[in-house]
Length: 184
Image 1 (tube, one colour):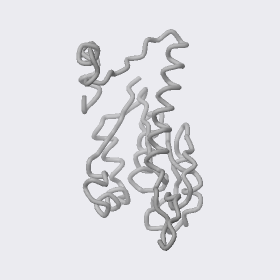
Image 2 (cartoon, rainbow, N blue to C red):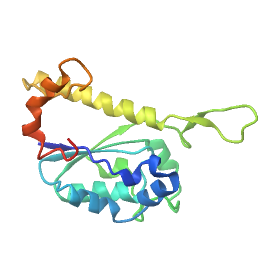
Image 3 (cartoon, rainbow, N blue to C red):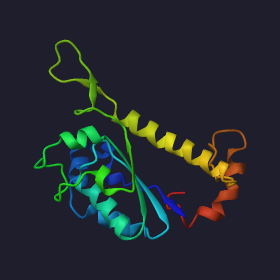
Image 4 (cartoon, rainbow, N blue to C red):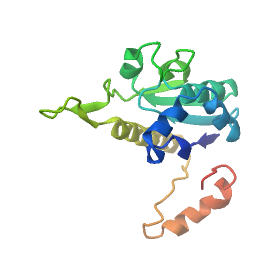
């Protein structure tokens, strides 16, 4: 089984919030990302998104499943359900991530994402989606490692290259995964 982690710099906020929104709202973009990464039967794709409604995300999930890829989605069910069907960020088909994946992990991020009220400010601040998504993804990894060990499998865990012996520990994975992990 090939596990894919797909990161496209075109969707990062570091490239600008407006660009990020435009990319994630572009129908068909997710299909191109899946095709470009040559995902197919026997692969696993984990899609992480705060709200679980955007066109690129949903297209990626649908395309991956059409290709026989197992798909895990991490997003806020509450936020997706509360978002109007005609919201401009929504996938044209109106799908929610939690409805189109094989397994969904609900981050419980509230509508609007921000959770701190500051006296005198019109909007809340303190967005928690990044924290909730990172926690859910890391907990999924912990649970997966536990399941693999229980099944008698020694999971290939990458050690920080900044830790003593990190480079040596990771060298054993380079040949095995160089052709499978695009950004290794």
